[in-house]
Length: 146
Image (cartoon, rainbow, N blue to C red; front, side, top):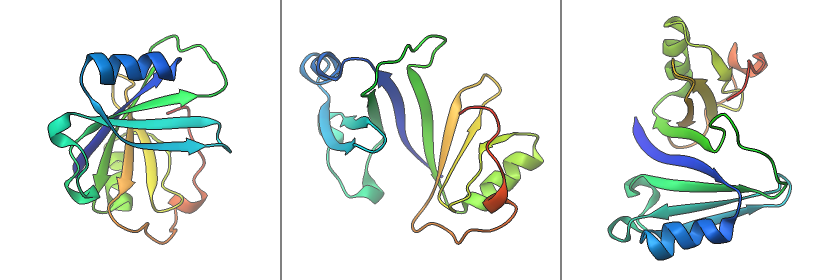
């Protein structure tokens, strides 16, 4: 397992980048604009951690800017912790066997979401290429929110 990033939702990308980059000293490592999903992702790292190969990349902060305004009450501005795992199906099965609800099953063999006992959202991503879709995951519905 490898720790990837912490996601924080922001309401003003300009003022957030000013804070995180200009004032705090982080550097932008990459940016993803998703027109279909209407959001922008900006990944930030410390200057000493900036761009390395994906496999060697240090943990980053992911700023998520949703283009359509929405309130972030109840801690919704904090998004999730993300980890890569060697086998997403085995990881989800182990969690499920331990009584954890799989909120977003790995139907695509690549991504799943669960919640900690305190409600913190955890994203699990398959290391390398996605696994072939398999049951019970492929037909398992979402449960709750993540």
